[in-house]
Length: 289
Length: 289
Image 1 (cartoon, helix red, strand yellow):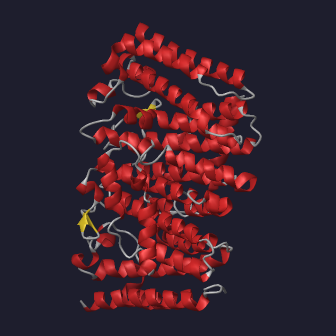
Image 2 (spheres, rainbow over the protein chains, first blue to last red; image 1 turned 90 degrees about the vertical axis):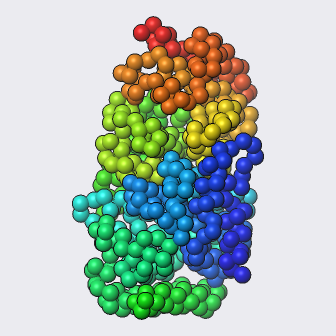
Image 3 (cartoon, chains in turn brown, yellow; image 1 turned 30 degrees about the horizontal axis):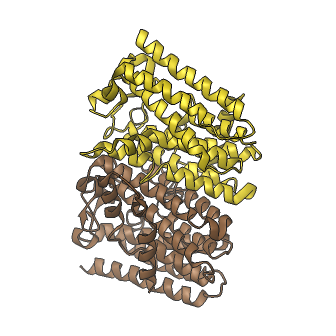
């Protein structure tokens, strides 16, 4: 199914698979450890779903884009967990990369995955150089400075935070990358797909804020209460738990309504509905546990 | 002249120049601080010289490639200086990025520059998407895992070091990237340019090892004696100071002999000769000081 396709793409494209001679084994293991076993792979799921809704005429391009996006996401988790950021002891129910290996290896694993993401996209140069190049451009835009997750993370060091820019770049960026890269991979214009990605990103941000407040550590696979502990802005601190839940519901409705006209529009709406149900049920579990 | 052209390209393409709205100012400043004022910009000088020797038929492509390569080099310096690696207090005669700003900002500045390098190359998609995509592929190969500077740095954490792989990836990689990307930018086959880059890289590695041993701190702009202090393999520990100097001379001669046949072969040989003289004179200054 969709998740099998995505896992196969990630396996095929991960930079640790490219070894053809001596290589530092610690970094090799840390790269694999950062990517496998994965979480829900939600960003590549969205990317691939959008590409399929747009016809998916170059499936290897879609697969490379999905894998590349996941590598960037994994890299961001490894770097965000570092002692100088969250100093997180666990992630996805196991020790974080810097705890399992070393801090230097964690920095290099993150760097290697960022680079590996762009390398992955260039594997499609002979399929369609223009699409591959546009995928690099969009992924870079939503990863780096000033519009990507690097900028999003950096807002947390600022004395005054621009909340809209902060949320858009910290969480929204890779969801917008997901919808727009799905469109590009299938040869469609990415611009109409910005809104869907932004709304899904907002929904995940709010769901994450809710989980941080109401879930126990064991449900998240990482320590809860980090937002309050680190004095980070959150939808819950802004609107309260009930207000944040209402907002989440509204945004998910808007996400489905924003899907651009395309051959697989109805199927895609079902996928977004499915993801929405999962998000809302996590919220219900959390508030009832 | 050549250096003015390169500085202008770096100024034009740096990711901090892309701000069009609110952005975290600390990261903005740290990115600029990491790149300006620069060192000798030796990698972009080599890249641009090779492109010119190959005809330089798309100068904006050459400029983007030169800037991208320098961003990767600057990113590697910022991350290598971090407390968990060299914990260096100074670089190019001023406080390192993590000392001047913060450790989190240094991690993010490095990440942003890596991403910005690939973004820079995609600015040329309308000039020639295939060349731009091949530049991304080559730069990624010599930056990440298993063949790039990330792998080179990671060798230092291994119990047993493969010295050939270590030197090739740690220092050689970005010099090979320089010669091959210069060829690609001008529409030439990169393969015959591998040897020149590798030999220049070896020469710089040996010169750097010599400087580390014999220079005073103020001459290098960074602390000397780091190799011995950190028990790192070095040409000096392997061959002694005199042996390393003989090796350096031999390699520089071989570099000039390896230049592939191309329209500007003679001019390029002069450039390599000039760089060689500079390297050898640094060595003479060092041993006489």
